[in-house]
Image (tube, rainbow, N blue to C red):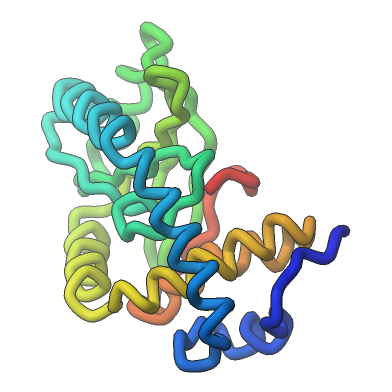
Amino acid sequence: MTTPHTDLVLSAITAKKWADPADFPPSEFERAAAFYESMRVHDDHLLKVRSQAAALIEEWTGCTPRDVGSFGTRLNLERSDLDLGIGLPVERRDELARSLAADGRAMFLGERTTSFSTTRLVFSFELAGIEIDLSVLTVEDFAVACRMLDQIDAEMTREERIAHTWVKHLLRESGDMAAYAEWKLVTYARYCPEFNWVPIPEKSGS
């Protein structure tokens, strides 16, 4: 592990499970804001790829996907993959898995518990050099996820996004991948604690 240059106590922030901009010294927040702006230069490319990926997913599934990942919440780092989700009746899952596997359109990564009573399937494919993960949730879980994303969009301030992304960057730079993996999920846990958002497989992406 390395020690990134920061005046923040990362262990205290991760224990709190939230990055409060008010806890940042002014000089630290200035660095964080500059870093956040540097991440935005990737937006146009990611938007284009996301649009293409969404069109493919809709063609394959008949469902309109939503960005359920860090790019959708504007908390991504520079090496971001894209995480899209759809809601699909459980009885159609086997049909979809067979269809995607038939011509190698997407790789099946596995099934993960989403809540106490439901699971989601996760598939992966690559487009324009970017990994796209597709989560197939139940119709009801997808509705809950969309409400959560709407809430994040409405309630999480730009300053909070800056602070969160900076901590995420520092944790990755520190090499503490366990803390980094946990931190990537704190926003979901804050706004939708009833869901288990651990991805498949455990990845070091943004």
